[in-house]
Image 1 (tube, protein in one colour):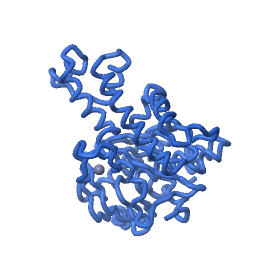
Image 2 (cartoon, rainbow, N blue to C red; image 1 turned 120 degrees about the horizontal axis):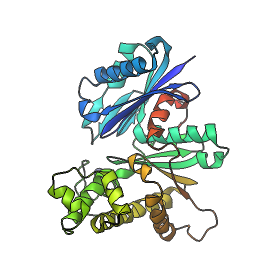
Image 3 (tube, rainbow, N blue to C red; image 1 turned 90 degrees about the vertical axis):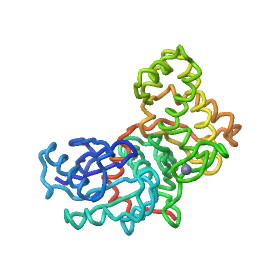
Image 4 (cartoon, helix red, strand yellow; image 1 turned 180 degrees about the horizontal axis):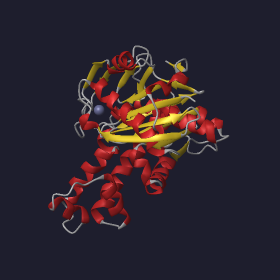
Amino acid sequence: MEFRVGIDIGGTNIKSAIFSNSGDIEYKYECSTNSFNAPYEKYLEFIIEELLKGSGKALKDISSVGIGCPGIVDSKKKVVEYACNLNLNDTKFAKKLEENIKIPVYIENDANAAVFGEYKYNMLNSKDSDIADSMVLLTLGTGVGGGHILNGKIYKGFNFGALEVGHMVIEEGGRQCNCGRKGCFETYASVTGLINTAMEVALRYKNSVLHSMLKDGEKITGEAIFNAVKLKDAAAVEAFNIFIKYLGVGVANIINILQPRCLVLGGGLSASGDIMLSPLKELVDKFDYARSLKDRCKVLISKIGNYAGVLGAAFLHEIQDKYLI
Ligand SMILES: [Zn+2]
């Protein structure tokens, strides 16, 4: 039996899993991205060893390793050209890893891997191939990534840099982004953006849960904010409304440019489910230029949540000839 390894390098955590060829997870391993430093390929080898130990498999059982990495990734040359959130420039760890472990290694932009994971999951588990064949997926995590499946292929742009939607400016002169511009979508609509908004708003609400967390030196997380929203904490609700407003503007912009059959929300924030989806859909209903049409882009939450990127990475070998530029 063949097995595949998928590794999804995020801004905060690295998720990985070993899969059977039919897409079932054999074993998962997760660690902090803080430890992901040069020589990067050595750390990836350590992750693969952990997966092999945990699953009772040997390297000879693995047919390929796939890696999802933020930023512009030249998947043909196996080079990370540029990733501002990880400070990577012209980084060749995938090639070096392949030389070291002597099995095929594939690398792809993390959101492209995630949209392929969602597509594959839909194709394996659903008859709704129309939806899968025209899909945009946004990863709402440390940053905001985008991937686009068009007629069953990944749209990458001629230089592999397409769908970097996290860096479209939605607030001219707004928050400073790691890419050098100000007011990028991801500075407001990512987990990091939500936390920054919550910390700003909490200062004005002395009786709020978030304010006491700040005062006690507790770390405000996305999960803590969503829990406080459920408790109707005034600061959390205001921060959440600001977050949804920017998310709605960005999502509607993407829909108005591409009009995919569906736009799927993935990444860490997708775990919040309907709390995020309902108010977002209300905004998209107002902002979508095609709002009066019967056929509209559907806004959905990922069916496999945070593991879409790992699944997609593990099966990157299937899409090597399925790119659009
Ligand atoms: Zn930016």
